[in-house]
Length: 194
Image (cartoon, rainbow, N blue to C red):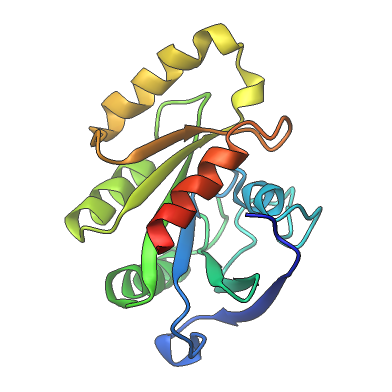
């Protein structure tokens, strides 16, 4: 998809604040420093619509981006890193869970993991949660440019094994630096919203 129009429309913390449209939605989930903002910016050919931050855990709301008047990307708070209290984290967890489990417009979740490392406990929990609720998952392994191409298969296998990856799901190697995986990611998203 060639993106000419992309804007953030609302930051929501509760269903009453979600956009009142029937547009399909694609949620993006991942650890705080996995490169979610860079992934969004690469897909929409923008430098900084989604703010990248050197302080992981900046996103504390569900951020709805309207893309080409055709769909919403929904950036959910990153898990893991953020230096926030347990109560705050529990609140996020509830907010994310409510959105993922109940939102009718949600078509798929892009679950971002870091290709360089084995998936964290939270990555595995997120994948299991999505499988439990039968939400289509697109696993995107970011930062592929940081690993020699010859080792990609080894890292991909490690991640798939840790997640107990379902072969029916899509797995994409991605780099915001080289744009590796950008076309495949759009293809998977377009297939999900058909």
